[in-house]
Amino acid sequence: HEEAARLYAEALEITAECVGRQTVTYADTLHSLANVRREQQRHAEALALESEALEIYEACVGRQSAQCAALLNNMACLHLKLGRHDEALALVEEALHTFEALGLQQSVDCGCALGT
Image (cartoon, rainbow, N blue to C red):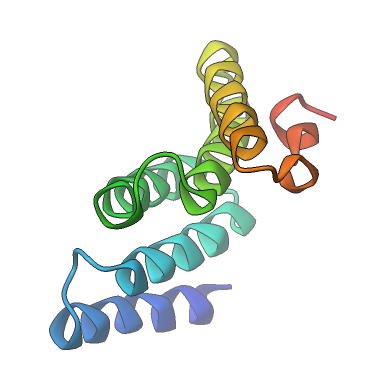
């Protein structure tokens, strides 16, 4: 996983230089790096990366988007891993409401955020 993390970090630098930091492409790469950190059990780092990606997605596509809802769900899982149950519940509820508003209920993975 460390090699993947190194490559995603390099990709972040390249993406920032080529298309900028406030782009969906940059947020996608942050999210990918967060997934690697999650696999490495580095939950606090993963959460920070997902939070940064969420801010960018919000600016680019709006909070009420599938991208933001997916990140909120992922962040809920990370909060749960860190023992922050109230934060996890609030985030998974927001993700669920967003997915429902978009007609994408089947996309919600509440199992992780609920600890199942």
